[in-house]
Image 1 (spheres, rainbow, N blue to C red):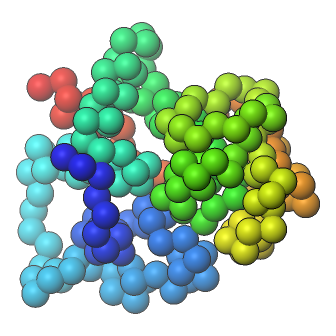
Image 2 (cartoon, rainbow, N blue to C red):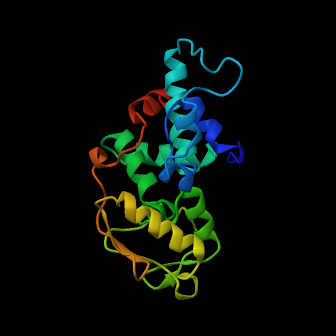
Amino acid sequence: MARYRGPVEKIERRFGVSLGLKGERRLAGKSALEKRPYAPGQHGQKRGKTSEYGLQLNEKQKAKFMYGLSEKQFRKLFQQANRMGGNTGENLISLLEIRLDNVVYRMGFATTRAGARQFVSHGHILVDGKRVDIPSYRVKAGQKVEVKEASKNNPQVKRALELTNQTGLVEWVDVDKDKASGIFTRLPERSEVNIPVEERLIVELYSK
């Protein structure tokens, strides 16, 4: 299955939680989910009981949509997490969080992960001074991630930094917003990653 490219606010309404898919509207408190906190469609306000499989599938889908991965990419990442030893669910979240597109998003250089992924793909991001245009590149603790000089005046970057300055950043990145650069200081603890996903159910789904 290819990466989803349809209306993203319908996805958030389907699951009933914000997945960070609509950046500026979400940060401004104007998301469709806040206005209509129920699933889209004629029967959206009549949620039925969800089976165990349905719950597991929903968690996988939420994570997949949130981080912008295709089904094939997500399954491959899960398999890698499973081979790492320890807690597979926590390993999965760690692998998702160290993706370069996610780190760019976490540093506030883009208002959505999709925007960050596009920014990386177009060659606007440097890692330790070298251009990296692979969104799935795995950032290591201590590496410097920055917007290249020619792109620092990009209106989208300026707007993203302005909006994220109002909401704050995560504790595992150290960002100099004036220079549009930051250090990925460490791998976050699972308790610090505030996402509406129960990775335990994803592990159960793939373990069948």
